[in-house]
Image (cartoon, rainbow, N blue to C red; front, side, top):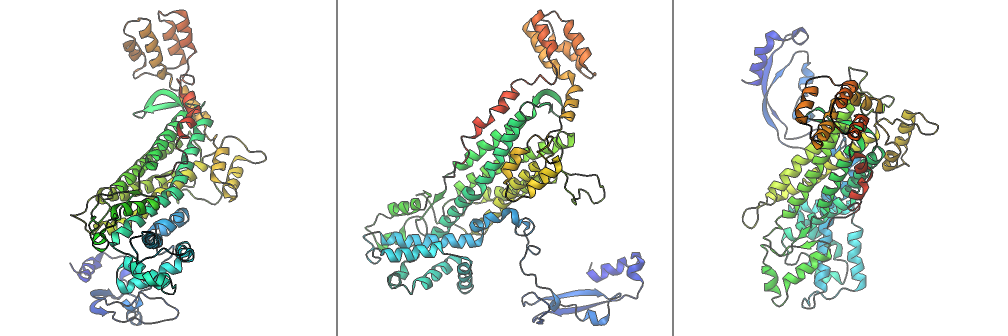
Length: 578
């Protein structure tokens, strides 16, 4: 049904405020082959629109309908409000540290680095007599192009690309322009990009982007998260907590030990990430050094390529097609996905503990939890973290599955996909930071000197001179012990496990069945459990020990596990990617 016809069909059911005036529909061709210029307005760039639409006049004056054309589309300049990705808008402040590495600016910058370093490498090969050893002054000039590369340079490359319609060639032309005034380098301009395919430059640039982003931005935040959870574990090592398996009461643990599990899991996966070798290739159009060997047949080009790739701090892959196969990227992204999955598990557990009342959340004046329920203080940071980690995993999963697959010696499908690496890392980083933010908002149970609980934490969180890590170390006693104790006091049935286990030791027949009859589907309290224990034919020492047990003390080795958690995680803290 056409748009106009569908509106006519609906006309009889329209509310009075829409149909109180005479309505009619008219179709016309709209063409926007030109745009009006207006100093007080902004417009989309000129483009041709042609579409048949139906206009419902209703209360719109005729003069206004004449303005309803493509010419009146407002042009949205890129800003935090117009960005299509929330990473570049709403969440920019939390992820902007990745921009120097994972943005298009970062890609161009690393391309420039690779092109210059390759020219300098050629000057060091004696057989390439056409490129003599550069003087110290020439080397400083080239290094200055790398170190001084800025946003204006990247924009210049983009302007060249408008003409070339080729991003890597634009970098080559940019460098030739920059160096043509230098008397020494001007003589060897054509050795920029010598024997290279675009992917020789790109794969090394992407490798450097990932390595620097992970080492400089991702790892420090991961380490902070692991350290904060370690502190939670140690400070709460002695606080007993009712376990829940299948959502039902189970043998008690301590809150600290449950936090320790996450710290160790995250640290192990962080170590897996650090062990991924970042690979690079530099073997020409199809990986055989074809052009290299025709131009200089006496040079050991595979050895030169290996030396060059390793000089950039990367590992060399000698067996390639036109592209480096991206297997290391798949491994890296899968490892990050697993780190994210563990943190999602943490987010959900903390969310659940908040729901049970084990944790309280600090309130801040002016903040609103619900638009209709004034009492709400929602665990939004943990929900935000979970959502962003899921979004990150979706993107990283596609990268991991797609990138290792390329038709024959190469197709271009990897090129556009690789431009989305920053999105996967960005949503991951956002998930880490919002989880940290959520932990920082958990309500403390102790006072700071001279401050009330809420006022103290709010003030410290707003003080930019205090790092988040220090805040979290000070505010880690944040549990609602009264709620934890109440749950334990209502769950004496959890002592059925130790009682039947001791009964087995001393040969009491059918211990499991007897405890099952006592506890299954029945309310068990302190008195009924003590009465059952006293009725058992056990050695007095064993019986005395069982009578001493309470749901609060039946925590096994949980305390020791929590107190020693830092031994398990300090081994990987600070390790960088290879």
